[in-house]
Length: 298
Image 1 (tube, rainbow, N blue to C red):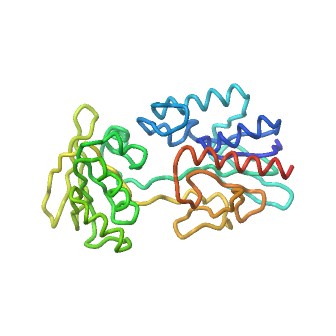
Image 2: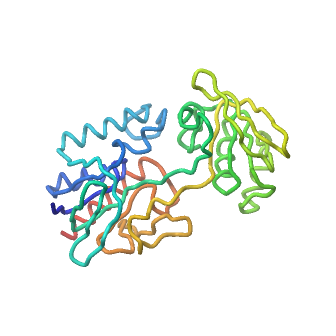
Image 3: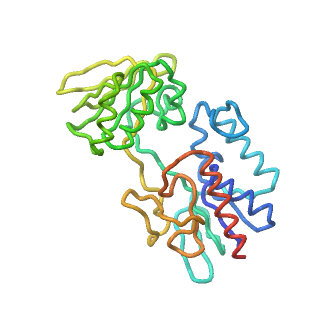
């Protein structure tokens, strides 16, 4: 079957693009291997998205799904495996078939690296988070730990220190991979404590809520009481669908201000692109920008 545009990913970016294209009467479909909403389904509380004073992630994801249904946007519950970019068409191969399209929008998001410890998935949204900007305010006047030794970990710790009672950074190395000026800001915060050569060994919980983390420091165990744990150990590349797509050193897709990638008629938006701000509102906006540019070219 031939489409005007195939969108890979049904998070805010993908759905945002789909709404604009569908309302313009284009023949489109969304390919999503999991459930609509993407990462929204792992966020406990959202208080920074327009129109909602407070809403949990799964409810916002359900709203997206309902809007898709109302607009009759075709959704294929399949996993995209590869994209063949030909001069006259794009061929998207999934685990269930092949589909042709004039344009493709990559809204695959980013897969956060995890520690793969026991109870990690159970505690996501119940003490474990991967976004200080999103979830930090939930821990006002509480004690949290930040896991990581890079720029993101230190910057997020500084952000959390503005409203958390205590922030402990757990760095498995004896140095940080971060600019000295940023580290100085963290060290200047009286409520930031840094543990070097420390490694998370175990999460502890009560009634499916995180209560402690167990770390090892110089082969000795330390039990730390916490209300929240923020993990910043990097992201896994989500851009293997197309071999010649230009990315940065971390695997984020490089695109212009129209969301056009290095491959003509293939766009990218959301958390899989190189940018400064990773938020729901920016992902949705980028989806709209990509869709509107495609409409100009048709």
